[in-house]
Length: 435
Image (cartoon, rainbow, N blue to C red; front, side, top):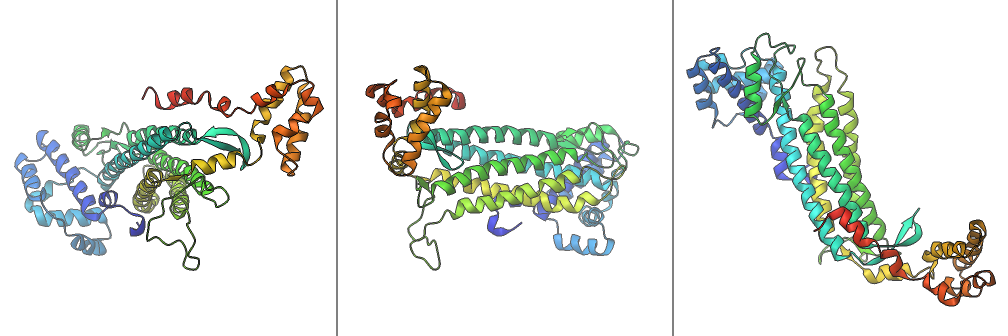
């Protein structure tokens, strides 16, 4: 985790003290279940909770033990025994390390997903507010980066809203996917631990039982989780790239908020750069990069090997912390986005009405001209506009092939901007419902 791109709430999930706390809770809940089943003394289970519930685990001590025994869970259990005393002999009875490690990882991923879903809620709120604020603000739509037909800035934001609403649903599904618990023993057969222990721990930790595990929880679950984070990151980059394009000097239809004392360049005092959006593009690349090793973790040897472990120790914190930071940065960009409707109109008018070419094409076909011929007539006038030889409307009015079929009034009617916006309300209804 890089502190520059981290937020405290998400980072806290992955702190050693938090991890050891979850490990303790798993072990203590398991001891409770075993006590109810008569496997361990009830007083022992009670003592484990009493001694460990409010304990602050000595991370340095655990690290020191691990340096000697070369095993993180054993190091923790050894330190826990120092805290609990003789009753610690009943801790971890019949369990294997992965019962603790995998259940803990899934608890952490569930908690991380809850934060990410809240992050998306903030972004959705910002997008919705701006979309309604500019619902009918006309702007030019672009394909291939070139002027196409009119749209509205509100529709641009509504498109993003719909995409992140899907992202929210995917995150919910990813959360559900990893919200499982395995307390099934060395190879998943429950030979040394009763399945009822697993059920008790799962309920206590807010998870479901894993229907069948080996020594580990199947990693296809985690692959889906991290792949989902990668898709969310891609959606973020799409929106960030849009902001970056709109902020270009030649376009300047919207830009990131630039604070009073902010500086854009060490060399050029005039610069106002889309640095936050560019940062999101970079962070999105990193989050996507974590998806591939998660997929490669699926193919483990037999009932388990350890090749996935080092991967998850890195991608678990890094992917969730990075995405959390980036989502909040993107929400902030949208909340404070500076929007220039006048520049949108200026750019819309820049090509002298070429954005209405399809309407003229259709109008000519409706007057009996073959589509190929109508296309040729409209295009030859459009190319003159590109060459700076006049405005589109005037050129069409001077073209005998056009005026032979369309009156001046009919030609002008095809230049009505509102025509392109007549279904905006319907689209908003689809995206936002009745709100």
